[in-house]
Amino acid sequence: MQTQSQSIDINVDVGEGIGNESLFMPYVSSCNIACGGHAGNAKTMRKVVKLAKQHRVKIGAHPSFPDIENFGRKPMDMPCVALYTSIKEQINDLIAILDEEKALLHHVKPHGALYNMAITDTKIAATIIEVMKSMALPVKLYVPYKSVIETLALQNNIPVIYEVFADRNYNDDLTLVSRTEKNALIDNYETMFEHVFHMIEKRKVKTITGAEVVIKAETFCVHGDTLHAEELLKKLHVNLEVKGVKIL
Image (cartoon, rainbow, N blue to C red; front, side, top):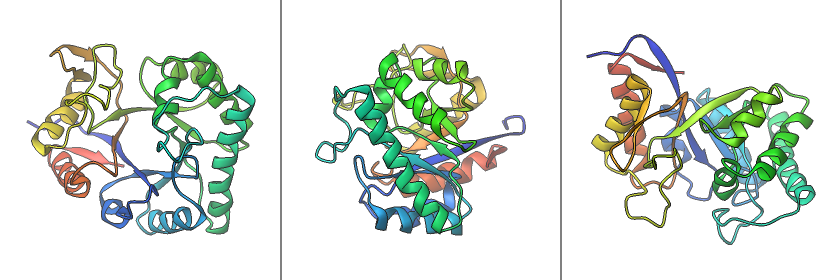
């Protein structure tokens, strides 16, 4: 059975030191480029920007807590001013390269612990929103459905795109299952496709308890460090289009 004609975005986190970006670009429609907080530098940013331009993939900034040692996955308690400055500098570093390469910034997607904390932490979410408000560009923000950062973004007229994760399992409250749990990741293709297509077709996610929870899903993320990520992305792209879902 085919879905009614519709389109989604597939995004991938890139520039994080793995070096497999060229394998992903033909199968995604947007990418999130690490810009120095948890990974990445001017050289890796420029390389990925060039690849994204070549494949006509929308470019996003992927700022993080400034914590390379823990890959940005450990919560940090930073003063708002320091966090604002760090996020702003990371995005500006990418924008400088985009300007040189004559490319545009499409969106911002926080990384790791910064992303997860912004779901429930008003202070963190508000700091990210202040960075977005400071930008003289029509840049979108990738957010999870029913999150604090979504609410604040809408209140401040920041355009949002609702993100879900193709390779992660969900709890009943729409938070991601912790990476410390054995069932956090989805690296089996059949399971991933069922997970993704269910969200597209039913507009609900099946959680680890078996519950069906309403969710908004406009862009689907596959992490670049997921096992066999390039193979999963290729199959996902091809089989969604077979089902009548366009990747735009």
